Image 1 (cartoon, helix red, strand yellow):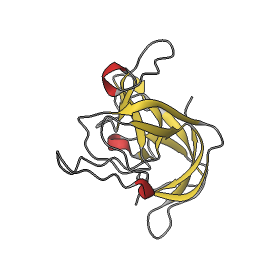
Image 2 (cartoon, helix red, strand yellow; image 1 turned 45 degrees about the vertical axis):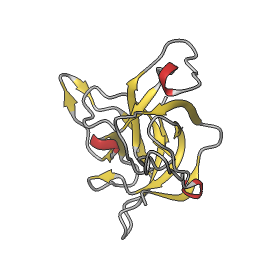
Image 3 (cartoon, one colour; image 1 turned 135 degrees about the horizontal axis):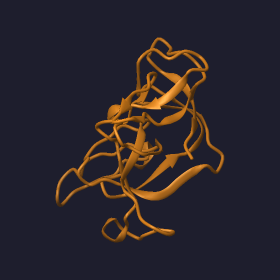
Image 4 (cartoon, helix red, strand yellow; image 1 turned 180 degrees about the horizontal axis):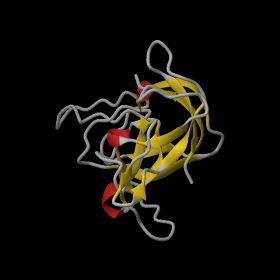
Length: 163
């Protein structure tokens, strides 16, 4: 589990994105970044006509964060039998996903040792990093700040603010 139920995001979620079909599994609680971005409203009905696609970026270099993933992405079980776990808010690659843009979450997808009040940066593989980097003169994007240090299980509260 990468996301605890203690969170707040009053009407600051984004449901206009689809999860990238090539990334067949992902734990909830990480930072989703842009794979492709549409123009205008860009609200499609399915993956094939929708340009807004997100995934966990393998590197923070050049990545544009969109929000914290609230669902678990799981691969299709088989071609003729597939049961989605709605209790876990499970989705499949290519499905619409919900992203938190503002608020706070309690997650364990953190690299480094956070300090209270420290800046939270986009890290590799959807993680939230405690350190910034510079890639070709471009600084690592800021996704919020840490409100607590890690607990014994590796979870920390992160205040999210992704424009």
